[in-house]
Length: 244
Image 1 (cartoon, rainbow, N blue to C red):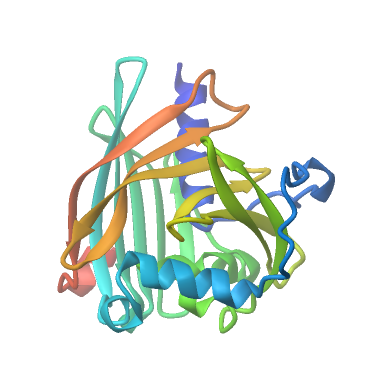
Image 2: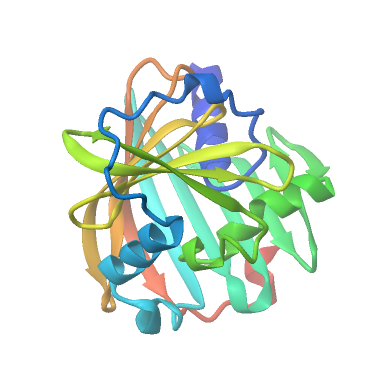
């Protein structure tokens, strides 16, 4: 049972910005509907920003503490994320049955990952890939982070029409994000490493919308695994000790 659990933890971290395998563009499902009017990727991001509360509100969210829980065949998996964009810091920690199994920390311009007691400094490339997760809402910063964006029509996500946005990282790796045509909210992201991550159950948190259910669908897992937010706090004041 340990191997699937470790794979799940890895998928959750990868989905949050850790290193992914090169994305195979041939595996991208062709859009079911091609929009007649050519859209600007910036417009999709702008609509998302407006949908979650507007730029004025999300720009004031400088840090966050998020606790999620998932039940994996009776095994409780708890993940905490501490993000602090103002000070360039991030900590992600995954516990299985109360025991720390995986940890990633970014601070002072470098980072390290730890799994099963093995600690390793992150290469510069992995650090760059993970930097976006220091932001609670990284979408307005995609270009500044060196991501290029391309729209590829629309397709259905959980029965809802979604704009397909392909993000290309500076090293050529790709992630695909899906934004609702009607609401503008992000519905899903896909990559070879993490599989599909579905975002749902958006709720108001201090004036902005944030998904409270995250479902991972991956060949690494025998079935979709659902994580739910148990606690979330924006603009939390962290100490240096919180990132050790």
